[in-house]
Length: 262
Ligand SMILES: [Zn+2]
Image 1: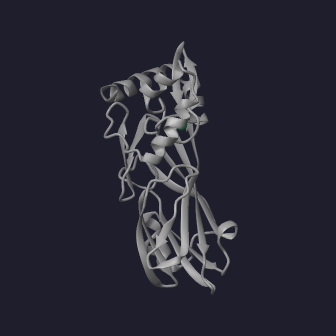
Image 2: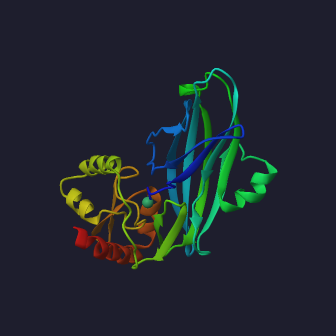
Image 3: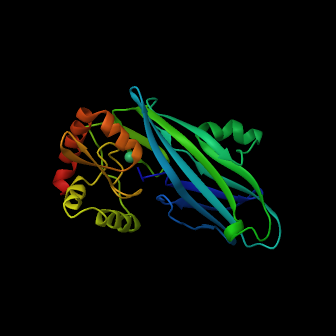
């Protein structure tokens, strides 16, 4: 699933609000620079660094790793609040939990009481002059989504909430950016001439059906009962191998969904 965490980020220097921005969708490893409102001497890059899917019994867990890099080109040391947000599920059927964050989240009492329960993340960091490029401050965190194995995440909406729909009742396909399309094309081009048209017709991972094939890494292929099935990651590959019948049903549902789009 590459559709991750677009949404608003608010930047502060000390307690001064310096700007707000809308974070775009950022794919794994993709670099991205955000302006700090009026302060071009601070830069933030946020990227998804890993994604993994595991299943346990009737549930699936999706884990996402993010990294935020803060670079300062200022001549003095500054204190900075960095904000981000986790997706906010619209239903109790999905749980979102932060796993690890480095440095730790802010211990500010007001923050912990007011914003933290709403899945807002805040880090308080001091940034020295010269902390940029290789020496940029790195904030890392990962979070887990847990939901029923049959459920598919249909969208991370721009407001930071996420909606789910039972398989077979998919809502709109996620939008793809030009950068994603380039990445997808490159991944598809690495497939054999026989596999490529099949994968292109499938469009999405057969298991993680909101993950466009090629958007998060190489396209994986497994044979399930003699039928080629294309997948987005190792987690989905393991899932397909351990539940062949279910996988073929899912693939069929996926093809019904993408077929009209060709
Ligand atoms: Zn996958």
